[in-house]
Image (cartoon, rainbow, N blue to C red):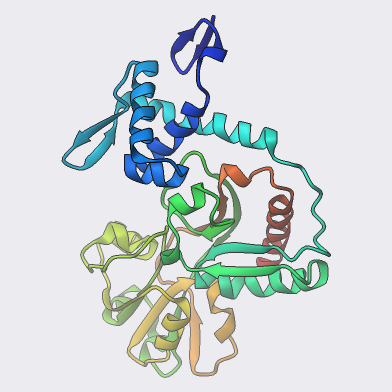
Length: 322
């Protein structure tokens, strides 16, 4: 007798293991039609598979609610187990061809914010030119990608800072970064730099945490505003934000305005350190350091080329913070 997913089975051969594939997709899509399209089967066939899964598991799995098809508590418990089994099966049958970076012309799709583009990518490209001259990079923005895309392996790597991540994702820490303030050199605040003069100025907010299509920001939504504004709130202060942007380079250009202050991760200021119009100052209050991570799907964990690229990026990241 075998115990599988909470069920005692007399013989595993009596269980149609294709049902696990169907269950994996159903739990990811929570939609019979979309699940059928992804699997390339008809909707009636998908509905029949759902009925068989319900009989096998003794649970409705998906229940229709006002929000659409909603997973049951049992289904949510099964989801990580099913994903683990599917990944193990895919790994077992995946051919382990050797990866030759010198000859490869593989395209790696990497989601990266422009913070990552200006800090990591120049060094990464220089390294690739030496070791893998024919490899190509497809750099995508956070708004181009969803967690679902990453989970399915449609995106090779995601490099960003995150508030939360799906538990199934693999991740490594690349580096931490402090914050700095960028101010026009002619701004009088430079000669009298303290928290009061900082708060008396207008500010540029810049961030793009997580993934997916963004929504408009509100100055009173401190929790979503991020590290800088949460640090100020802990001191019972708020700053007056005049511009919200998702691009660090745009924020640095706006920092040339005499009446604006830009508070951004320190490594992002490297490109303007020789600009005589700009001054880089330490924030007049404590801000927690930002943590940059590299994230990928469990489906790509054992891919030889993917392992090689992750190793290269990790190595390059150590040079960024030197």
